[in-house]
Length: 211
Image 1: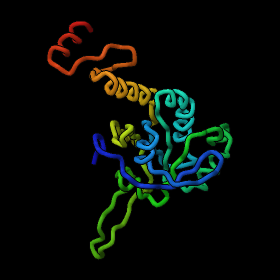
Image 2 (image 1 turned 90 degrees about the vertical axis):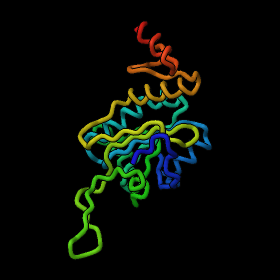
Image 3 (image 1 turned 135 degrees about the vertical axis):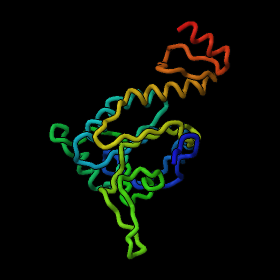
């Protein structure tokens, strides 16, 4: 089920910051309370291979997201204690030391289940009523952009081996902000500073004739 155009789940989950402080976070309420956009990106597991490259990539662009009124939050189903151990592991040893945005510790999988992004196949035993699980029961590389009202305006899900392009999320934030501020729509490959267009037949015709 897609959440685009719908409110992000109104659920509180555990999170940890770079200092090791744990707290409850509700991204739907956070967006509305802070009046900011929120980018939350899910990754499968701590202490793995593609995941730290993505986390460091988001950290490198963190100030750009902040300048665009956007909070960045990482998330996995690992515990807060495992997150903190990884945060205290040096980058050259596969760790994420130096990362300053919060990490959700959805060890109960409540939020991941609501989003339906867990990597498992559930099936019914022929001779029993309970479900059995086949798979690691961790999340795919899912990404959500949430607006200031708590509504999702972008979601994407990558399979495990496929790392994300962080610059694309900056572009999407720019495009959505342009729509909010100017009421125009953003055509294919739009980037900040380029022409957008009016959502009318004449507007499309004018844009296509000039590009």
